[in-house]
Length: 282
Image 1 (cartoon, one colour):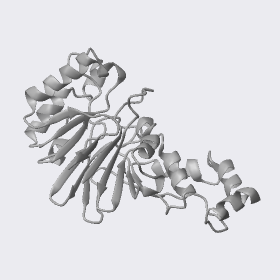
Image 2 (cartoon, one colour):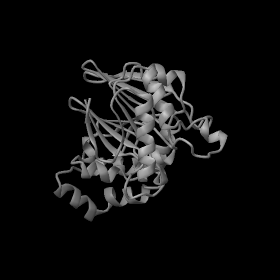
Image 3 (tube, helix red, strand yellow):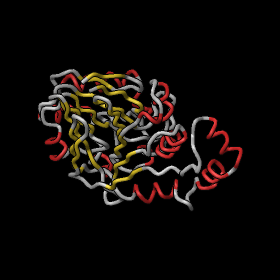
Image 4 (tube, one colour):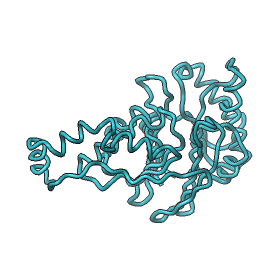
């Protein structure tokens, strides 16, 4: 498996980090976990096309995990790719209809591109045929505990505490060729994710705050520090750890040094801070 980090940041507008998005390649499949703002551009920078994505899984529906969804689906459609296959918690189906339905926010654009003769001729000149259908992502709404199989890989999920009851929030694992990758989504420390992470070759875990930060107790309960994450990974037998979702104030030399010290103190394996466009073999 090959992991490309397309977005390692937060909702904050930040030139160093796009919002959440992680591309996992298994054989010919290209599995995107989340698609936050800036992820689409980093997908292109990493050398991929929108139509390359074969599977898109949403861990939850905060905007920083799905803001580039419409852009990805629209661009893949404009390339003539097959409909994007999408899995995510409710209301991802309603959101998709709100983008691409006949009364959706993109309906005027899509009418112009599919019905106006100049746009039709541009499409035909690019190899397309008429009539041109609208984008129609193939959406499957899922709940925690969902599992599926691809070509040589198996995906499992669990519920993680984050933004309930607004929507379901999930972590995912993918196993292939005797290797295991786990993506936490945005997760507080919990038994379900610890179990899902058991013996993972690589755990990618969100980290929204540093040790010693003063933070409201309502946030602290769902936002583990590098030390908290490292202890969980150690207890689960994780072999390698990446922490991601860094905010602007965390990216100082002091912040990185403190995070690395916490990781080293509580986790025996390789551990590092994720950065946009890094590539990791699993």
